[in-house]
Length: 400
Image (cartoon, rainbow, N blue to C red):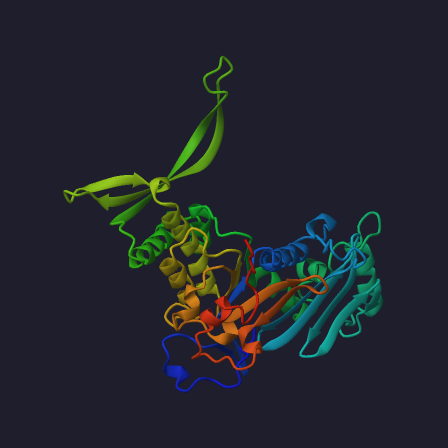
């Protein structure tokens, strides 16, 4: 997500909110909000991210990709990712049909690292005395092709998992895709998932520290919880077929977590609630915070569909703001999300580089443009009004 404005704003180094992230000579944006009408293809963008990461993490499953049914003659689904890693620019491309991978290519700083096209391989840049081109070709044929000789496992996956020392470019590119991209097709997480992500380990001390961090942010969001507590107990036995004459106890060590929240009643007394009794919005934002804080700390790219679901607009805005706030985003983390909430367009927070508009066309399918791609639009412009007026398209035209 490059910074698509002609120059940096005056005094940007003193600004409270980041207008862009700097990585060497490159400028990228911290957020990208994707807008569009229902059925315009917003969720398809997130699903494409998810499918791409799943293919690289494991292998290509033809059922995981759904080609455009309105283009029955187009049999190819293409993924192209450009990214920065260790100060270098990478371009990775993967193309699949309904049976197998047909094209795979990696470039570093414009130079070809390897390519495979219809099984014709170019490995010259990877070749070494230990792994000459013919040996790399054998690795491709033996480890990338499945038992029926379909090209299903990407070459970058095989090298990244089994030959990590073969070439730095392959290791960097594979590591970026697997470790830096976090993709979620909705914003509904179990609280324990975000907590475990933030804690990193299962130790009680680390879990409690992560829990306290989430609660501290939650209270800053003006949610009237006075405090929360987290209890983790080990349950050594579980009961099967409870209540029947076949009831038995089965040894099954497992961790059971209990989360309680506390509020003051009208008399000033503290009242305990099970966390599941809190509003859906409170639960959602609390669960999100573990994911968000982890991404901010590790410099990950967080990709989420419908980020604002069940969140009050102010809570939604604050979650987005964390990626633009210098106090929180110290590791060049990025957030990509879809939403219908337009309030953040007029809060002096989002810039023209950070708003993307999606519209559906029969000929080209889903078309994406950023507001910075339109002429005559500046950051001082009320682009929320322009968006709702249909200046950038991406809104439904109803005639009820």
